[in-house]
Structure formats: structure tokens, C-alpha cells
Image 1 (spheres, one colour):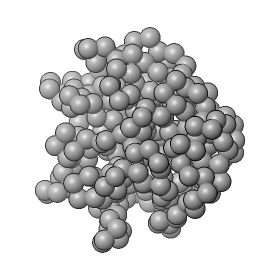
Image 2: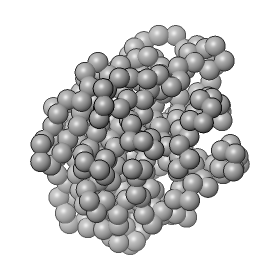
Image 3: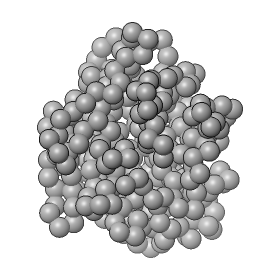
Length: 298
């Protein structure tokens, strides 16, 4: 594994001598990896391939959904249904692939105007969904070219209790990846255009306050601030230029895992949550970590 190590604590998280495994390849633009701890499967999107796939060590690769409306980010809700961000339709949807596979639209408009193109989504322990809404899916190469209806790119909350959609932040240039801290008292959101990660305090009512820049990503190659997750110790892993950028819980820069292709997102998996699955343009990669990932819902 090639890595740019900036702090010795990096080697407490990963063995830099290991090889990165190219697990799957031949896709157009992979994204949205999520691990299912019940059936031990990895689900991920191919945005430009317009599909969602499921992979297990035993059964290999299966097509879960054709015509995914250029699905990007995915997350599991409290009932194990997949929440998906659709570039082509500007919708946030929910699908129970273990049942009939019927797609249910959760959000498509805000105050009468189409959403831009939901990008990434996370589920809070109370079932509420937080998602980013840049305009990426309205541009050639990432979605369906069309005019943007709203005058901002923000972060939203969808409340499962009353099905309401609330705009939380509207001052991003291009919000992208997001994840909660372990105690869910903070929400991290990165901004692709600015190459930095912002942090927000999460109030008891779910609102976001006191947004500020938490970390800047180093310009280290091809790629942008995109998907991100935290591990069980609170270290944050964010895709960015050159690969996966790692920070400790105090925003100290630990280093960069160099990925052969442009990294887009990541998820921990396997029974010990110590395998890091990385979506990167045409491929899915896997490597082992010494510190497990944060336990997902389910």
C-alpha cells in the first residue's frame, strides 16, 4: 500500500505494508458503498452505469437494480431498507430489496422547487435522514444536464416521524459527503469546491448550529472531497485528492492512503468491520484496517 504518512498514529490504524486488493472492476463510476451486517453484503452504485449492485464473498456480484436513475449515495434506514440519492430525478428514495423492491419517493421538491441532485445520505439513530444536495447531477458527465431550479446548494433533514423536509444549511458551494460523530452530537459535511470539511453542532431538535471549517484536504493528486466515514475511535476517513485522507478526532492530519483511481466513497465491512471497501471510478478496492469502523445501523 502506498501512503503519505504525516503522523506516526497512522500506523496504529493501518499496516502500510499491506497490498490494496482490487476486488471488482469494469464499472463506469462507482459510488455509495454500504455494508449490510445481516447478510454480509456490500451494496454500491454505478452512477454512469445506471445500476445498483450487491456483492458477497460467497455469491460474488449480482445486479440489484437496473435503471437506478443514476443512483449515487446510499444508506440503510432503521428497518434495513436502502435510502438512495438519485441524480437523474433529483429524488431521495427508499427501497426494500428484501421484499418487492418497490421504490418509494421520500423527497423530490422543497418549497415547490425540484431538489438539485441529492448526493449522499446518512441515517440518524432516531430514523431521521440527513442528505446533501449539490447540483452535480444536473451536469454532463455526472447526471442529466438540466437547469437548476433552486438558488442554493444545501443540506436537508427528512423526518421519518412526520415525513417533513427541512433545509438546514444553504451556504455551501458544493456539499458532498457527510457523516455523524459517534455520539451524533456533530455532523461533518465536506465541500467539494472548497476542498474542506465543515463541522456542525447537532441540537436536540436535530437542527444544525455553529458551522465552521474543521479540516482542509491537501491537494495530493486526482480527486475531490467526496464520501467520508468515521471509525470506532472517531477517526475520520474522507475521500479526496490522491485517495483517502485520514484525520483523528481532533482534526490532526494523519496521512493519505493512495488509491490507484479517483476514490469516491468508502464503507467498513466484514464481520469484524475491519475491511475498508472503497469505490473508485471503475473499481471497488478493499484493504484491512487495525481499528474497526463505526458500527452501522442494522
